[in-house]
Length: 393
Image (cartoon, rainbow, N blue to C red; front, side):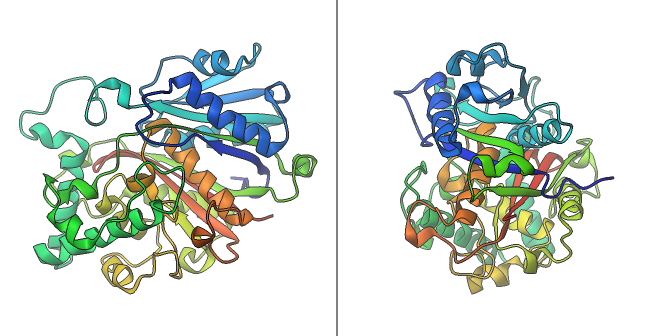
């Protein structure tokens, strides 16, 4: 299978602020993100030839994007793959460009979560399983993953809770320095450990915010990128894996690794020619809807040995000053998680870091060349996952 390495370039990106945006509608968020992306690329809506629109709960058709931006009769595809929607939309756009069906395309993800009047994601159709009950919801599944991880790798309740708590502290530290993040406040480890419990061991500060927001990207084939900017970045590899969803019913499913993430990573690494991701990547934006999700994602992506994330966390390896910064944006945990927008927003963080344009100097990493984006949907035992590798030409 032919690699897509360096065939597609990102020439513009933008995002709205994420948060509880009661004064903005879906159209406002779309316009905020798209306007910034168009200005970044030095073009306008009339210059694009197609678009991919990612959303999970906000609307049902692609006409929402056309209406907000007044796109005139363009082919627009609505994409939805649960919380993995953002990277999935970018993946589809890449192949449209590689096929030479289009020359310049827009990808935009949006979600207006707060207007649902629900304190989390809307439940999927159907009823709760009579055995699993409320554990069928995301936080219950991830709590099961956390307790299983502690047991498998010999962490006491206190050790395990402290380990994932340190992830939350890092996320809030980074998010507090990001002007577009939803939760811009540092927290101490003591605050995390004493926070109200949601589903043990996941407390309030272990769970991502329910947020409104939008993010956008403008892509073209790499040979055309210099028409728009000199500091473009290219897509080195992309992978998507959708599991059959029966892990949660299997007695041998251990909850301590994400098979879909592992498969998607292998695809993306093969495209990019990456043999040792810990050595070859400079940063990673991973899907941390809960603190335990970041820990297991890091191991499933091969960024550290399984069962040994604790050592790296305690050593500060994943902080802004570490050898492998993870979620320098603040991640979903602090930046926010409007489902359809998150993957594209993660890509924007890597894009800006590679350009040396992180919003504040203290967030800017030193000379990064290549980064990874991990976008995951569903919950343990029932996942889909996308991985995208982005780097300098």
